[in-house]
Image (cartoon, rainbow, N blue to C red; front, side):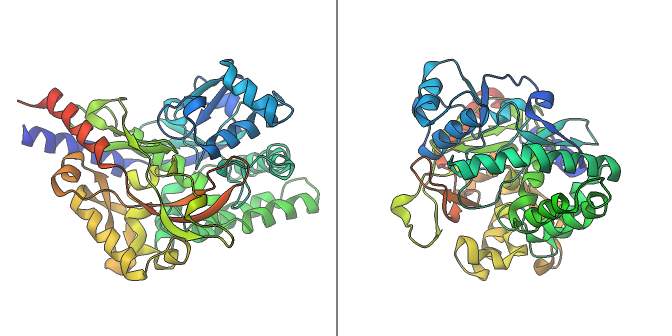
Length: 415
């Protein structure tokens, strides 16, 4: 049986390695996300009801309903969310991923990323920036005005520029970014810069007012996290290709909704295994502390699932200024992850480790055997709706979801 599992894991990892995530379009959620409905809100993590949602996710839902003009204020939005008329489903159930609260509504613009090797696609909203933003639970007039501008001006211009440019090889950009000090999750300065270099010549050739193009370029330039929302769907369509490999113990999903942390395993299909979302240890913005923090939240841990993010922190020593710890800690986290993964990435490499490939393909069996849990770096949202980002730090999944997954795996494949 061990031999069969190893063969299955080799197949799953091979699919991850052969993936070719490519940016092909900018559209809207309602137009392209499979199964999307006007009365549906997608969210990060495993399934959760309105009643069990954490503060920042409720805040993002409130903002989403107001953005869609389904509610005029917070009270109306809360009443509608609790009424049963709104369908709440995980982004992951719709080939999508969302950072932090991960809220996606019908009219929101989304990136369309295609895995050119296997043909599957993944979708993600455009990144708003840091601080007081919807994905961290804020829903003020300023937040909604920014989202409206992104839908009305930013996304259409990017779509036209991309049409002019042609598909963008995101795997190549991520690989370059890792060699320029990014790790693909919470440090995206290089990736964002590379994307600007890629798209700017086509943006400036659009028949638009110079002021409009200037605002777009300044917005992207001023938001180091802009590339995160391209990295995430890249990793999503990469990991999805490795799903449903019979006998494989490789993880294809890690995600959190602020209440629970969930994982899915290739050989166990779509089944979620969940445990309580963790408390993030990190650095806080001025005026905030651990007592203000929500629990771990977001789909951005798909980056670690695909072999970057916290698994590639050795490539990004400067990230410790954002999430805490020391440069040696960053290297230590990466080295430790090799003990729980099935392979080393053949494209994503770490200069500081003599260009060793990043640890890739989290193996459920190795996690349980070693007791080493995946290392994740992440933003921290305020626990109350409407406030936004308060910091960033490091966190691990709950051990229980791996134990539960192992029991199910043994039940299905044990001899």
